[in-house]
Length: 423
Image (cartoon, rainbow, N blue to C red; front, side, top):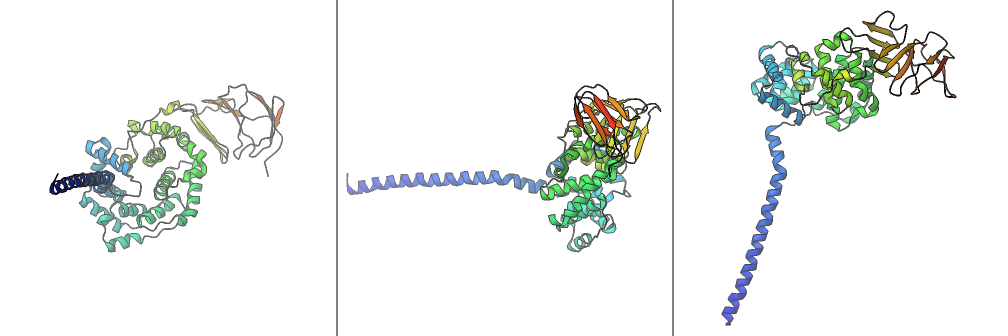
């Protein structure tokens, strides 16, 4: 081969290698670009279709609400009718801001901002407008809305303070350490009464704090919060079960959303989603839309054992779920009942798996009962010293603050009162 031929041969091989190398480099670049596109595409779509809303409206919840709008569900139609037809609504700021968050209707969003500027004393609704309509608020208007000041230690006041701090980008975790403790105390005390507004405000606080900090305040008392949906159901009086007020119903729906995986939440969902209870008009319509999730499974609440006890001194029990069912509440402040016969508490009362016995004598025999059944004595003095003999075992428990004592899980025994109130 001539030198020219040898040169051309070498040059061709080199060019071939160079072409392969260039092609490989291009292929690597295309693969890298494709991977980058796949990684960034969800972010682009999220930026185009969803706002980063930090108060209550998670991306998942916002997608469900937008789906409700597309499908024109009953809840959406009821809500839209209220937004279009009830300008004097006391929940007007909340409703307009929610409508804007779902539809991106700027006219309604600007109306929400105007409403907030005229109602700066309603801190919760101002905060929601500030957060959900932030892209429509000018600098001067933003400063006005951020300047709202609050005081008070109720669950509502604590929630409003947290909402404003988050919406105004002024939140710090340490700032709310004291508020967290007060909020949890308020919520636990709500077991003493019908606490719809208190409970609802506390749930919103827990949701907002969890979203802002990735910290679940319920972990400080997981056992209480696991019982809370059942406590909510059983503390309702018979007529409330049939006809709850709108705030109580909204609190039930929100409580399910707080943790839908709890067994007791599924019972509560079964009650709260009954068609006859849907909020079809009035100020609760927006709450029904936000928290009434028909995609969550529910369990028939009638299958729930109808009593619940808290060792601090609290018992709620009922004989059934009919409107005329016997319902009883025993607290440290005394006993309350509805629809119960006068002789109901003079003899053993049966409430599901619970047998309630009045302690009329110094000693009493615990009746035979199965392992899944329970026996409780009442009408003891608060903190009274007791002795309990079972199979040659001797214990000295005390009655709780309401004069109740739940017998340990043993089939029989003898209990005696040996002392007065604990000092």
